[in-house]
Image 1 (cartoon, helix red, strand yellow):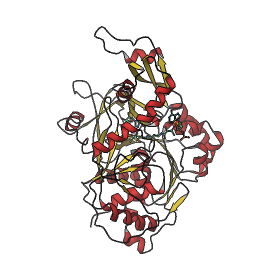
Image 2 (cartoon, protein in one colour; image 1 turned 180 degrees about the vertical axis):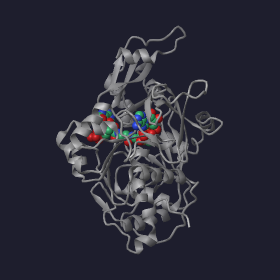
Image 3 (spheres, helix red, strand yellow; image 1 turned 180 degrees about the horizontal axis):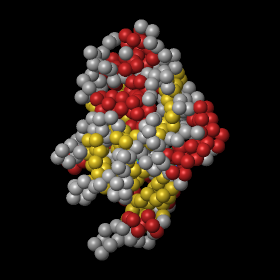
Image 4 (tube, helix red, strand yellow; image 1 turned 90 degrees about the horizontal axis):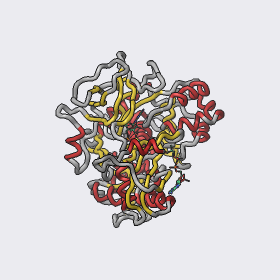
Length: 471
Ligand code: MCA
Ligand code: AMP
């Protein structure tokens, strides 16, 4: 028999006494394993005949049960950002072909029917484990230009990733995993929630990932993006409370070395750093029993191959200094961008290596350091991946904007902060709100600078690096 993706929710085992009263705690609600099986299966019965559904991924028990139900029934779902705006929402729904909202519905439902999640409904129907090659979810992520692309992620990729991480971190069912990250990205949803439901550990979602909430959660295993860790490191009392944890894990963006060192000093733990992407899931990590070097993200996980190449595709030496383009071949890789065979073909080479778009170095011992992105048009802010082109297109739709260039500038708190340089006659705050309403609140520029003109070369091409320096 196939091993279930959500191993800890095996109905027979739960019925035979392998229950856990507090398997998931979120938004003031506690769900036992048998709640997750019973209510999740009831959701599965409601969605079983849908081809694809959208889930407004707020950090709530409703979202947890909606996701669980889809995975039990084998219905692919689209996690929609909780703070999504109008343009992005319309794109996600039309591109994905979602047929209904499952769980919560946004104020504007885009004309789709609603399938409610009933917290207290129970079903004990037994579903066969869906094919591991089938798509579990379609997660939207930004590219350098255009609207976000749907990344199709299979059940096999998710299972392989969680198992490889469990090995690297000695993650077991005796852990209590804590985070306060969004449930519409890989970090919070795939690793945090699905990881817990596969491994069988307790999972606590803190709501907002504040230092105080992390300190009070009493976990053994904590996940955070660098912004979360830097805020914790700045709060001595909260940081000290984490000394009783087993492992602090940082990912989604580069962890600044001073934050790493502060965490060592205040918590007694050198954080685990790991690297990944929506397309590949997590592929590289430092190990519980290995070196944890500030600024370095570790070794490839079991089953993952990495390589560094130059612009002509030739190998770059692993000498700890030479910089190359990072490519990945892994059982955790996605199976393509939805409706975008062109983008899928561009992302892989003929031998199936995925071009990450990141540049990196590898040392003689196989340790990896991520140096940055190849393109200035992909911004990482607070751990969110945001395409400059997507924001520029929206701003150009505002009547007060004639020309625009969006860049990421270094920011102590967010890693990068989104700044829009605008030629036109709009009010900066109006433009910030406009982006928050059309895309997602987290994609809004933190600053809009009205300028007379934008720097361009003789060919009229925007000089974005110069703009970031102007700042
Ligand atoms: C202010 N706000 C506004 C506006 N101005 N909202 C709408 N329009 C405006 N004009 C409000 C928001 O409503 C919100 O209010 C408040 O500002 C805070 O928002 P923000 O400033 O964005 O939050 P933050 O505190 O700066 O966020 C920091 C954060 C967040 C919590 C670290 O960036 C975050 O959750 N990051 C995680 C991203 C992540 O999970 N990435 C993983 C990608 P209120 O709060 O009152 O509602 S997966 C990945 O990268 C790979 C696979 C990997 O390796 O993991
Ligand atoms: P996303 O698709 O949101 O998962 O973003 C993936 C990108 O985040 C990667 O291609 C990297 O640029 C960046 N990233 C993820 N983890 C790390 C890390 N530990 N250090 C540096 N960059 C990272």
